[in-house]
Image (cartoon, rainbow, N blue to C red; front, top):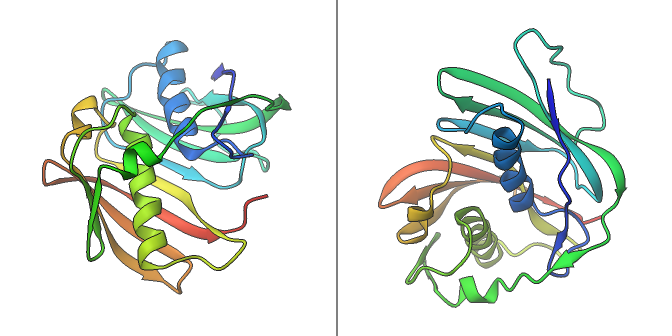
Amino acid sequence: MQTYRPQLTYKGSRTYIHGTTLYQEIMKGASETGVGTPDGKLRIDLHKQLHRLADFVYLAPGDATDTPIDAVAGFTLTIGEDTVKGWVVPAGDQVGDSVPYDEDKILARAEIIDQTISLTDAPAFDPIEITTCLAVKIHNTVSPPPEGQKWLLARVALSRPFMDEDNRDISLEVTRFVGGRFSETVIRSGGEKIGSFNFLLGEVG
């Protein structure tokens, strides 16, 4: 078992750790702890909002696999021929710092046709930030949330990790709504499906 505890910050005006930050730190932690660099299929399930510093735990073969009850996320990574599982669990002080996060710079380059949103130019953000921002925008356009609620990222499932090249030709299509509260969005890079997001309608606490 390897544990990674990064210095987390809020993005923009949010008062919870953004799902994009969790993705970035899960990927970074795998490399920094010596577990390895993810290079294949991955899945991240986001269970709860995070307001504190946290331990990112990477399990080794033979480790107990019962996810702690207070885990805010669980994940499965492919590293070479190995499958690495783990979770994110609150383990520190409240997060007190935030960093600027101007998503309007992404949205200014976005184009919506029916239930698909795509980029007309590549903004200077990470692909996970771009795709999540675009996904929220298309959700808010196609199915605006009730007052007091937001579309929240619940699952990331990819055939391989995001790459910088994905910024140049990315599109997202909302393919399914379930009960008006759960959705599936297909992610395409260069016209090829590379994964999906699931969003859940919920309150920000």
